[in-house]
Image (cartoon, rainbow, N blue to C red; front, side, top):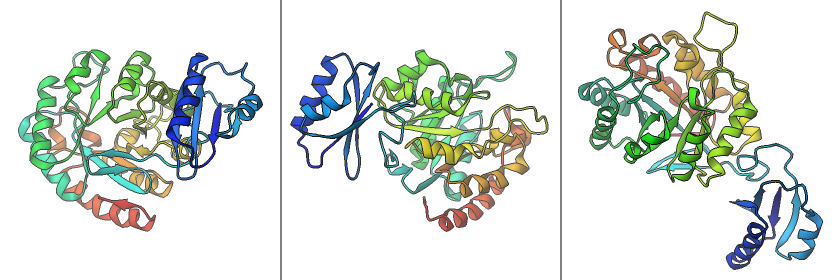
Length: 338
């Protein structure tokens, strides 16, 4: 349920209105747009008389029920696109960013070389896996705390914000120096983890699960936002289908649909979507064409020797060539790129 407030209402009156609602046992979420302030009521609102609240509160212009189960992420609640700001880097509202780096941090020399190269090519955020969820218990599972340290050093050297994947809520103290926390596909419905990152005031990149619907994806984002963290970035990374020639199937229709249903920025991970290096470039172009706000592309200084996902990683020269092409396409779509 949402209540749209009249223009130029004082913060004092808004605070009083919210306290009255919360005294009834509801949680609230405030969205301030270019024209209106919207108060979203979260909880079992079936017994609320919308008309009575509108009549008895002179600051309320009108109220309406949100039929979808996700409220805070809903564009009805927040009509304007959300802008996520990480230092000087902006995602959403016409700003397009490319996140790049190795699937797994393997050494300080490796991540530093990749960081310097992708920055020169135009990437604005450095990715790197320190903790790696692996299907096989015998596969390389990352350098863990040491990997985080190497990413932090690369940020000091290059100025690039860093993003890395968290595995469980007990690791949160290790991510204090990480600029964006990534929730991987396997953890999209790890609700304890979602609520914990929702309580921290740090941007979160949420990846869609391999077999999850768009509604389930949005509800996972709702878990984060319902705890007070409004800095959520959605990432479409492909879903599992009957197709076996690619690692996953990139659901391009999800990007415009997510942007219709939600105000949150949406980026695409073409590397995991296909799992094939030669498909990364065409899928990146397609993502831009359907309205994505950014890309997450895996790069490695020596993909043939990568300890993880080398087959889908671009080398540094291939990434630089792709960025030259993408920059022109992003500009054609009327978006701004770092």
